[in-house]
Length: 218
Length: 277
Image (cartoon, rainbow over all chains, first blue to last red; front, side, top):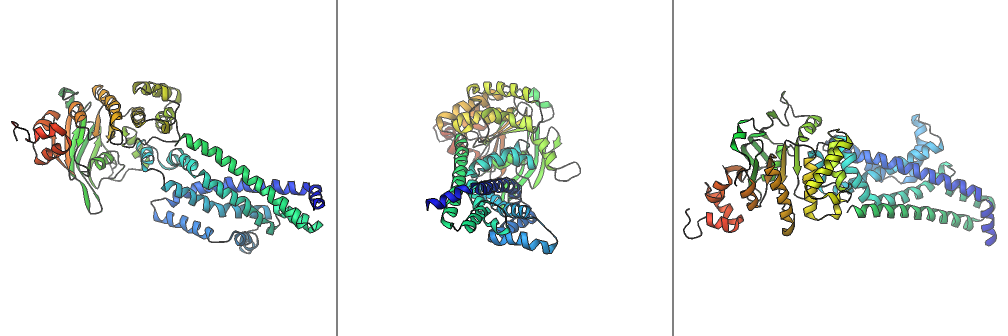
């Protein structure tokens, strides 16, 4: 058993590359999904029915597709519509679009729970449109939604493992190639699990520090 | 004692004119043909039982609620509807709203900003005034409401009375022509009401033009130039505080005073020996 882990140690270059790719995928997808989600959220809250229904349809559609299937569609399905994405672009697009829906819904829930008056005060003091959302509505939303957003980031990290099916060289992919090369599934996969766990602990530490910021303002 | 604004100032064009303003929520008529004027330097207290439409009326003035009919003018220019008869764009509404300060019942401070940032936010972001000058003015305003030492604190760390004084400083920082107060002391513990009323009294004496929705009868009596009494969405009575509190013209006002104005009210309502009805 120890020898198995020594083999994993010798192949650490592969794992580190995989870990780096998982981190890049998760960071880019989180940033993009949160930004797009923040743009989609006002549509979910819009007084205009057409905007609201379109946004809600997208959110519901995404939430009802298994991520693995969605990744297949983006990578293998879109080419038949003439859209060819390489595995990196397809993986990022799938991860981002899928989680945009979740982020928008998380922010919408947090918005609905905000007290009405400070938002009204924004209008009363002359804020309108996007500036009103960005300056008055969004910052308290992000503070109060931080724990749930953090949870979703962990979901993104875990979902990124599915991208091994489109040959993206992320952490699961790396562990999988080590095990198939050396027939040491336990050592290879347990090491990957520990690395995922480390990533999630980091996310939780970030959420905790945002929580402290929020606490000072609550 | 009953008026801080001499009547000679009233000849000028009114700051605010409401003509025949009506508003319904569904089938419920909340405001029914409300008209009155506010002149420069006046403090108008809107009194009336709960649910009489006072807060809705206040929110119609800056179009946080859209009136169904009637006309509201600020400095002679119609609010909410353009000269072409169309509903104003958000931009135009924004421009009007920056001329009207508003103080909210639950303070409505922006929780993610410090006290100073709250006061500076709209002048810098909406009015686009230079940050340094706004900062000086904001610090002066916070000094005026007695909160210089709190400027870098988040609202969550303040008492209700302090929050509301920040709310007033924030409204004043817009250099408004008119200040609206929506029950500014209703959410406060009784011992904190005084500090907020003191600031408001000072503003009234300084000649600020104010419309105040309140249940603080002592404040209304002492600081108001005029009382507008609302019941079931209608203006039932407009009077000087002295006239309103000693000899209200309507039965409804008498009943209202009886319920809300303590001993004063009972005397007015003729429940004490020797007083006229």
